[in-house]
Image (cartoon, rainbow, N blue to C red; front, side, top):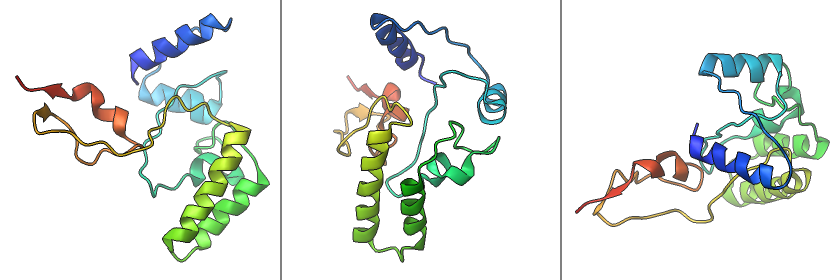
Amino acid sequence: MNIQVLNQFISDMRKIGIEITPRELGDDSYRDVVLYKRDFDLAFATFVYNEVGVVEPMFKSTNTEPGQLNFISYKNKDVDALLDEYERNDGRAEVLDNINKRLALILRDDCPYLFLWSLQKTAAARPRVHNFITTVTPYSFFDYANRWYLAD
């Protein structure tokens, strides 16, 4: 977890009157508390997937049992139908793109998660930027940004 992002979020929430007391958990404890026991008011999670990543585990209403990734118990029949349509598609990019756009509109309106950022473009860097990951996409940009530095 990026502690700077968490601290900034806590600070921003405090400004609007919401007090958050974080509880740090190791990986095993996090899985137990969040995925199995569902003993939380707010969970800070990192989702890493690429542009063709399957989001069904997080949003499908059939994935709400303890241990499954829809740990917020999000349910929407229209989202379920779009995820089913996505699975049935024969891989045509224009169809998948259309499904993803429709899915994004519903999720935007429902707001089951508060996403802290999302990039619109893929990044590139000059050779003097070291540790730049060439496979950076909007889905994983910040996973590696703290490792980049400029050569002298």
